[in-house]
Length: 435
Image (cartoon, rainbow, N blue to C red):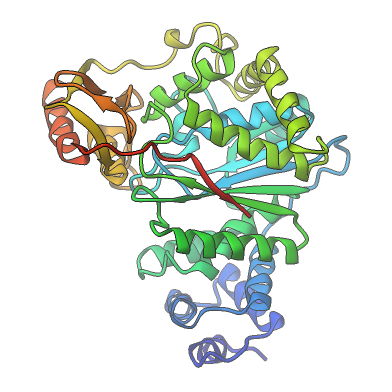
């Protein structure tokens, strides 16, 4: 018999815990026989003592098996997905999924909402009138099969143990435990029934893993556990010392996605991350033999409009307007009060506090302070400057989109301390490393 208290005691004493014991513990988490206090004690023990690779793998698989697992046996193509650890101006998923679908992949993307200072894919999609981020399993499966991808929320049936454990981690200061992060991310991805996974691990002052070495540790652990669990995986470490794209805010990022897919405007850093992640997915899924071939196929899918067409079909199937690609401004909300934020002097953008940018958007109403908060999808920042940009006095560093002048003034005050103009500084790479 595996008592929760004995499992906690073993882990607290840095003793190995068997796969069978961890499975028993997670069954108890799911059926309620393990209490919140016991989950909290277990998480703190893992936070303090860590977990071996076999333990991480066993915990991940047990959490995967706490709910249903999706199956795609009748699909003629690789089933792939990506996961990002979150950032500001990061709408990569909304370009990556239709682009990969246009290249022959199937992407059953299960996404989340904004967390803290970071934006969420579901919040961005809800900028589209009528779009259903919880379409139900039948419609979701049909959308994936018909368009090559669908995007939905996690739901209660997919890795339910993770939902309970995560809520307790959030209030017990154990969020940044690498073994618990690994199990949380991979249990959901394994439940999707994937053939390959690519991970976007952010590092920098706007990332949860601020230090590069911590990001490396997380990337290495995720790749190892994923492979031990039978899922081919690669991880990229990417920069979050500034907004990934020039727009940050739900409707503003959605507009940038549409412009990117339509070929109207493609910001260099954003495009680099999209193409790097897609290239690794192409290789994992056997859709290309090398990076050059992968790049050629991806660029073709962008230029011939097939990726844009996939996005339009997915939006329509999940309840949004069929002509969103042709007339985005007909549907996306526009903030009532928009005005440029002007540089106070001449020089070079030396530093950007990216977390402050994200919190600025939260303050404007574009993110949540409380779970039940209703978002203003129209607010945010556009035309953001980058580190290394040369600016002159009275040049815009960003445009602030606000509900009113008072909110604009508050956001401007935050930006005045978040963006530092100083000495000459090199621009930052978008992608640091690939694992």
